[in-house]
Image (cartoon, rainbow, N blue to C red):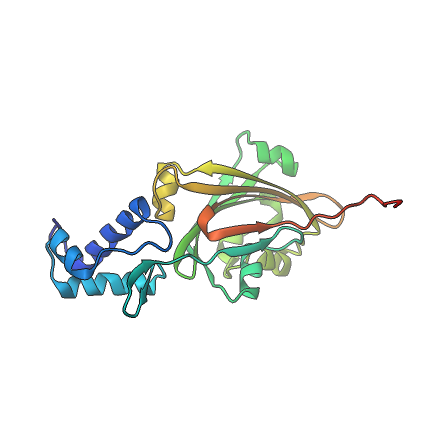
Length: 242
């Protein structure tokens, strides 16, 4: 069933159980008892228990005394779309930890639609895979005018990009235009976020402006839909005569 490839058996089983849960179970479903998993995958009871313990630690499963082990509802990030701020800044207020799993810096001189949006000759694109409480959460592309952020690759050293831009380059965001779309994950996105191909994602596109209403940054963000809730406050701007 499992290969002898140097990866501990319980971690191989954990990965198999996680994929099985994503494909075949819903939140609140009871997973099979340990003895059934043991027979199905031809592993020891200790291996099954360690794999399940790992999934409990990762908040995928929840054990209920005397009832069994259930698929746990994942905590959703509450994102207030009515004010400017980076994901890192917002999540810190919710006592959640957003970390960078990987980061790349790319200079773009060819034709690109964001060059027109930012009205610049050369773009810098910062590509990041982000983890929320150690779980793959989002893929982020942040585009900036290359000339406004010299040596950013050597200087960038904190999680919040917006805080860093303000402190290091005096770039502040005062307003923004944001659109939100739904899409299905392609193979590359699914691999990065540890999900299945065609799983639901939310795609956020934001163009941010400085206090003089000049465009200064464009972000293109993909977030796992089951970990995210977008909050928008609506109001009636018409005065009622009644």
